[in-house]
Length: 72
Image (cartoon, rainbow, N blue to C red; front, side, top):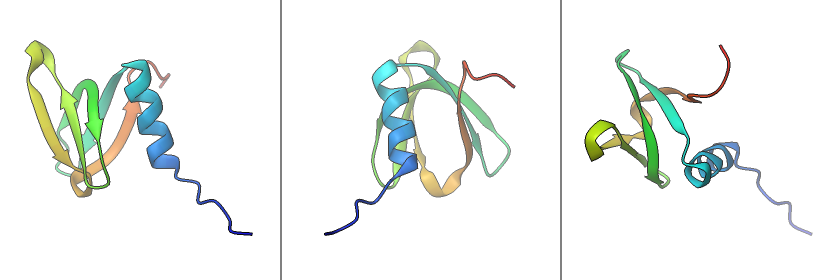
């Protein structure tokens, strides 16, 4: 019997994608982006920020990701 690999990252991102919640993404440079997750794959996130502008962020440049509705 093979074990199923649990991928926490994909689960978290998929839930935010499905719910269309606002997210905050902090980059390794210290810059913070807020927007809605449009798409993601193994290597990148596509975030829609204000005015319908989309930003492609490579995952290796991401320090943290959080749902904007999470409590601090």
